[in-house]
Length: 585
Ligand code: FES
Image 1 (cartoon, rainbow, N blue to C red):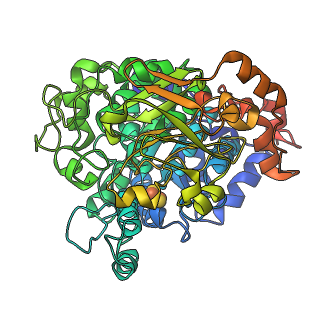
Image 2: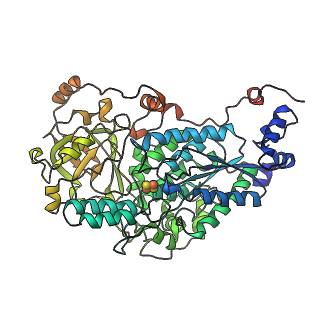
Image 3: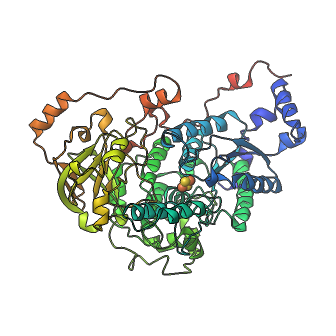
């Protein structure tokens, strides 16, 4: 069914507000006449919501106000009516204790906003890490056609003129500072220059990864994700998004179900692996799949990951920033390289299939977007391991880790919380050596709202000896911009009694990446004895959203969504209740 047929058969959702000759219709239209829309406009044009996560406490999203204006122009040009609604803005580096628990809150904000207002389609404006998955999750649950538009990558400046990315550059310089290779003065100067422009982190961190996979999922316009925030071409993309959203609004198609099926998730995972993307995206894709009833599990990441090498030469696993990836052809060119591994018949919001998009794409720089046969790095980029230490799984970004540690046995050094690490990591009494396995627990979704603490710092004495990587294990997450042999998202987490809670200093931990194993080498009887003695930490939140979160958050292998948000509920306003307190004229 094409868009015009669909338009004839399907009444607009907004008609329930505006196209009725009754008192509610009168109230709705007269209310919005205040902002300039006439009775005739409201009774004839489709309505598009612009859900904006702009805030000046969130520099990653700072250009979204300007982009919203471009989207608005595009909507009006195409004959629609735009309404912009501000949503919760999650500023990754500022929000405490972690932005992570608020992803689900923002998703509820988005879902209920879409459901409650007369939108026939919505444009989602996100940028900083959690704003993107939250908007997708909320819109997917609301079931109204949507297009995602990101703020675009920032353009970081470097003191050295090199390719120093926003956060990856920080991690590298922190290690150099601790090793005495960078002065405090140079580090302070770096602080003043690194966040040079609006836009999200410019390497393949969580925000760039999420933005790129939006194209592979089919929910963003092709080529839109990596255009820098300060590039005028992003404004042009925004206007095009506005125009396209009116077509979606009028047709009601492609719907969420048309796009977000198993093929879309497979394509997204394939792209995620090819760009060496953030491990956080694994959690977000699991949560999004849960919203639309796609039975995605961690095993699928392993199945797909075994076939996909790193072909994008982009930091943190490669050399360049995402701007080079864009000028090399962007996501469409990456998809062209990945063509044999994709579901080419998957539909996109653009109106074309992934296969049709790939046909018109071109690789413009083969050093930046490599062929599958000549990748940046052979082997998988993301792996999922299981074993007695992580029965429900743990993940590792193998393309940003040290291969010599992929098979490792070593004694555990256990930290109960992140403050203890800060206080004691350099304490000689801990006896940490190069083959030690650093463990942080109580940092999972329930224990500490899963902050990005997974790249545990190395002891100064080892940094001074030139050690740059060790096996580190936690139930926390890790920034997509970070690197190292970090086993993350251990599930079940320590705070609910997972095996991580039972590890003691000196226990032998065994990692075997090839076998996808992570084991705690302690006799079962001894583990059972420890389990009997273990007591859960006290839940800390007595009220409000954080109490709701504590009571309902799921484990990492299920995406850390709130359990009652799984599954889509496309339209839940009963007709009688919707029409309110007065019948027709
Ligand atoms: Fe916002 Fe990195 S801090 S995207």
